[in-house]
Image (cartoon, rainbow, N blue to C red; front, side, top):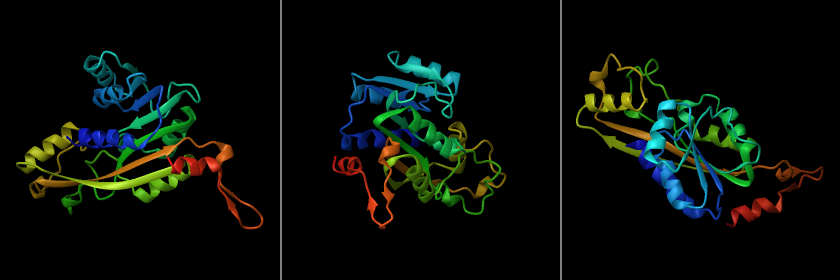
Length: 238
């Protein structure tokens, strides 16, 4: 399943990070599978699964009873300012139209040097569908990686983004459409679904960044020299 593959790739990227978080929030945590993986990795941390669906929160609690499970809105997080060391958001952004507000809310709750990791779906997702009219049936919000980068630069320090492509092949178009509908990728079967191929591509954007403090903003003086805070360089050398 795509969400698991992407989530595990995000988990593996934590090997690059020296951060030892005490509080981790898994935004849009769903059944809690990735929250469980985070708990295995950071055994001394409190891992909180947050999802807007009560059913998902109940499922997460059953999946991993040790998790703290919260039903809440990612755009209005029920956490104090500077209280979360790491935010993990696997494929949440495709279902949030106001990405800027989401990122700013995440930055609000992150501690100094706090980390956010997330994944999103790029514009080449489902590109094989070609002329099939998807506008009336696709739920997720596909976004350009450059737009994501621009938003992150406004909110976070040291953003890093890259793209990977996942190709999945199904027995027949009906199997593909059934899975897409079950996972919420589409809310209706296209009328011309006979044209759907058995193979689909997902463009997945991976991103991570650190908490941005006002004092850390790079600035240009009247002499035209841009001065970058030393803290930025230290993060790059981790």
